[in-house]
Length: 312
Image (cartoon, rainbow, N blue to C red; front, side, top):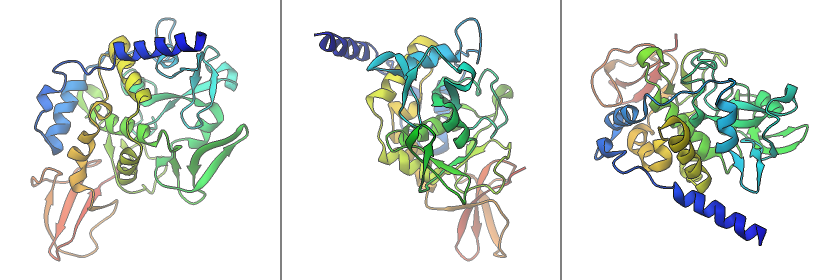
């Protein structure tokens, strides 16, 4: 009977949220591409910010609610391993759990400052040593399973590339968190201007505000659809804390509507290989002068096109 009551309580809790606020996305209706991305940015910006560590409500407190183990409410679920651990221990001198910046905080150099560094839409509980193993690796396909001292994690890495692949049932979650960050943070009011790129950068520790690998993330987004765990998490963050939502959880189609049209072009961090450049355009097709840390499409006389990003 206790189990039945618990399940009913959880179901009622989910149903009490579970609804996108009426009119929340009205200003984005009918838009695609960069126009849609801009509209979503304007909807989700200026969220309520919380400190990373504080005697009041901070990131620790919020993660204990957003990532609570529904089978053991005293625990949190760790993102890359699916392990359940006691929530109240927090870091516990390295014996507890850590707060994983899914968009690695070094890629943009925003640290743990309020804003990008404390945005719970892109923070998740993580095992301390697994977090260290992920480090600031780019997200991309790889095949070497990461086996931690506590056991198999279901996540993958590589001995030849600085990359990480989350376990299958959260790889879409990770993609949607990266999409959120690239949409929420556009360089306004001293915030970083975060951009996704579709290549593995040569400098693993660049502080440029970029994250890879876009095409793999979009594939993961499509392969691992939104589930009720994500929906509930999105609701808790919106209703109880930040008062903004992750649009790519509410409307998974937004990702393809913004970025899908340019997925089939190639992106490099390099220079023209000798072909004559006819035009340089932005993702919306407008002529542009390339600038640092922005993606532009180079069109050549031989019919080729490629996406490039100059890294400072």
